[in-house]
Image (cartoon, rainbow, N blue to C red; front, side, top):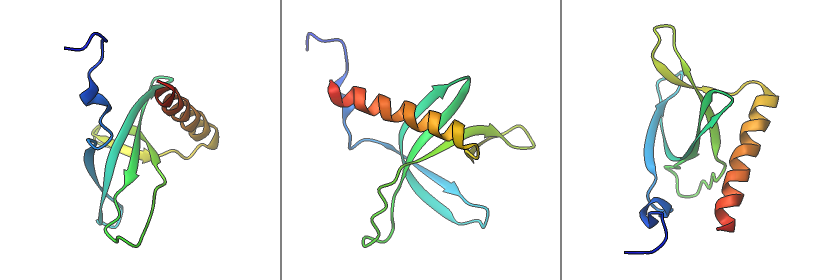
Length: 102
C-alpha cells in the first residue's frame, strides 16, 4: 500500500471511457471522455474525437454542455456563447496544467 492518498489507477491516461454521439444526420461519432467539469452550475464534457481514418489526426478536444431536450432527457449541446466557451476552456486548461504540475 502506498503512503499517499490517491489511486494511481485514476491517473492512467490510457483508460478513458468511450462515448458514441449521434449527429443531426443520424451518423455516429466515437469520442474519448477526457473530463467532466462543473462550472457556474452547469456540467461540461471534454471529449476527444476518435478518428476512424488513421491518416486523419484530429487531436482537438471538444467541449459540450449538458442540457435537456424537449422531453426533459439529457443531451450534449454545443456551447454557442463565445464568452461561456472561453471560460470553460480556460477552466479545463488550468485543471490540466495543475495535473501536469503534480
